[in-house]
Length: 364
Image (cartoon, rainbow, N blue to C red):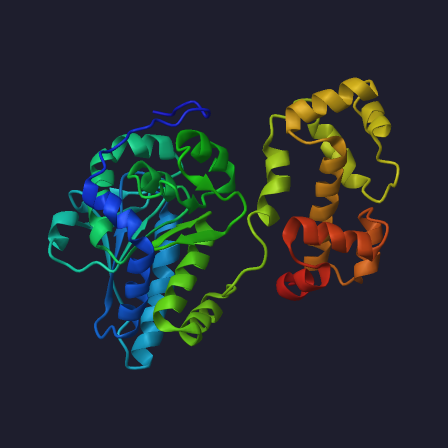
């Protein structure tokens, strides 16, 4: 059962005095944890929580990082990770994508010293919050004993439902940030972070961000050399530049209910080298008066026409930097920036990276 986009069901849980004390002692606890991690002589136990209609890559993306880290540690004669995928009752669990995962029952882990709990997200996280109340209760209790707890993508909502993010900064998928803010006002939502660590609680922004977070966890546990080896094996960055802004802004513009502007957006993308993309010119193309066009466009897309043009130019420049042999000044002019310096400022403002660095990292 889907819920309207503007509403998140607030299914709250009771907080015990012990858990309040745990929050108060978090800084001290994380110091102790860091010291203990250095002297680990046995594989660290990771428990991935599974539930119906979870996102498959939310689960397996992070698992692959820890699997590769275990292989790297074994090559060094050191303990890696013991991974368990567990659900309330155990057995086969179907993901949202239709593939089935075999899981252990959580009660089978009774008495196990859990190092890290990892909570995957789900495409329909509203329904998951309704279906997973018992799992969320278990998560809240188990997180008191685990060394750390982490979420991938919309798994942040289940952690928030468990009360683990109250008063903390957290990340989730950029398209769900507003929903998290409105549903859980006690959580400080970081709109741009790829992942966030607050004490022993980690949250990540999306599927690929879950891989970034898993690499950071491996680096904390096993050292930079192992994390770098894993990153190279998986062909990903150990530390990705920029934040969610590098993915979200043009996607958000394209996903808006922009009735009447789809054709205009195609026209804009074909005329980016035109220096006369003014409100008046766009209004003529949309067959509207300039004043009405500016008002309706902002209402429909959430951006001014000028900001939208900038995002189209930025996206076009990104594609050319990845695929085209042309030099940066040529790309800047063909995308309508005028010169390389103006394009550089735009890249720094939106992506926190220069065009040259972007090309060096992402060119094919």
